[in-house]
Amino acid sequence: MNSISVTLVLLCATLPVALSLIEGLVYNGNFEHGPKSWQLSGSHILDPHALPNWVISGFVEYIKSGQKQGDMVLPVPRGNSALRLGNNASIRTTIQVTKGLFYSLTFGVSRTCAQDEKLNLSVIPNSEANDSAMLPMQTMYSTDGWDTFSWGFLAEASKVDIVFHHPQTDKYNPGCGPIIDLVALKAFPPHTRRQGIVKNGNFEEGPYVIPNTTWGVLIPSNIEDDHCPLVGWVVESLKAVRYIDSDHFAVPEGKRAVELVAGRESVIAQTLRSIPNTVYNLEFFVGDAKNLCEGSMLVEVFAGNSTFRVPYESKGKGGSKLVRLQFKAVSSRSKIRFLSSYYHMKSDFSGSLCGPVVDGVRIRVAPRA
Ligand SMILES: *[C@@H]1O[C@H](CO)[C@@H](O)[C@H](O)[C@H]1NC(C)=O
Ligand SMILES: *[C@@H]1O[C@H](CO)[C@@H](O)[C@H](O)[C@H]1NC(C)=O
Ligand SMILES: *[C@@H]1O[C@H](CO)[C@@H](O)[C@H](O)[C@H]1NC(C)=O
Ligand SMILES: *[C@@H]1O[C@H](CO)[C@@H](O)[C@H](O)[C@H]1NC(C)=O
Ligand SMILES: *[C@@H]1O[C@H](CO)[C@@H](O)[C@H](O)[C@H]1NC(C)=O
Image (cartoon, rainbow, N blue to C red; front, side, top):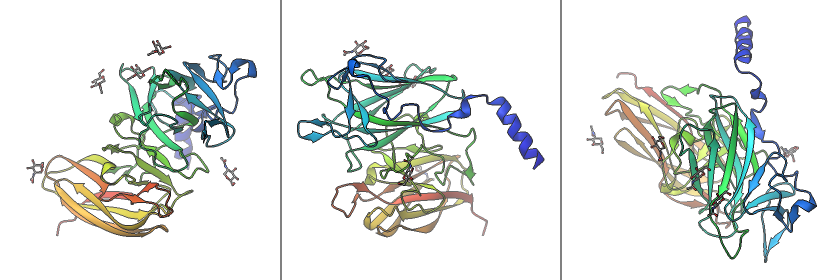
């Protein structure tokens, strides 16, 4: 007991102040504190400092719940308001963080015009001039017209600026661009738990999930590994994977898991240290998220030079089974990868993509026979 309290005191002494924001919405991350009427022309925000805690540039609109563009209601996921980033628009917020810790950013977006809307995310300062990511909004995964994305970064100072930039312009419609709402942040503990040889094999360390939302959090593809908010893993594919939690979905183990939502186009992978010619036991759960994703599923697992196909019959009501496999390492590094052989859609005719859930990945050296 004594040694634990001593350790805590030391931790508090070495990590001053900034731990106040561990996880949750950033201040005014839901944009409920809006501009005054004289700072607006219609919904266009005229004053760059009209929104508490944010600085805007370019054509940014303040969208109220129920607001329409033509016949289409612009989606506001929660509360009364959201922002829309039009021509070459950006929004920036400064936050207190703990230098040296890894953070993940969670935010809701909806595309409103073009198929190929993109968002350029960056964190300043950073030592790499190119430390930003272009997130495509091409595939919308949920049917609420709304998705939640996540992105990770290492804090290189105790105060950082987070910038969302919509780089495109449309001369006929300056407002065209994605809507943003619910910007949240989460700090990760400095060390990641291992389950045997695998880092974060139960997926407990991942992005913040916004409470009372039913769409999970997408972990995007095509970002650099050090921006993957799923600690230890990379999304090695064209499309995202969905991070789900036990408050809103069925999860095989613990509180969090990953749903492979885009067939062969959503892949999670991890590279491990291994001893050549050694046999390893690989264990994991395959299941379904209790989200009406029904049918015969097949998860493909690649480990070292071995390939496995694991069937799972989903009734869409939540369930899982434990799978045990063996592979032999062929080198000092082995990659494990998981993907879904098939595409699945929810049985509610919504057209929503879904798929098998993977959780509890553990690898150990196999006992010698
Ligand atoms: C976008 O905005 C930035 C900052 O205001 C400006 O420097 C840049 O020239 C603009 N780009 C275009 C294409 O309008
Ligand atoms: C994305 O934003 C960063 C920081 O503002 C900038 O340096 C970078 O050039 C932008 N990337 C693109 C492709 O616009
Ligand atoms: C970013 O810059 C670093 C060095 O500054 C370089 O090593 C890395 O390859 C660059 N990444 C991309 C995607 O250009
Ligand atoms: C989530 O919903 C429950 C029940 O409706 C409510 O009590 C709770 O305050 C909500 N939490 C948030 C963060 O909105
Ligand atoms: C493992 O796979 C790689 C790539 O396909 C191949 O080059 C290598 O020869 C294989 N090694 C063994 C021992 O099968």
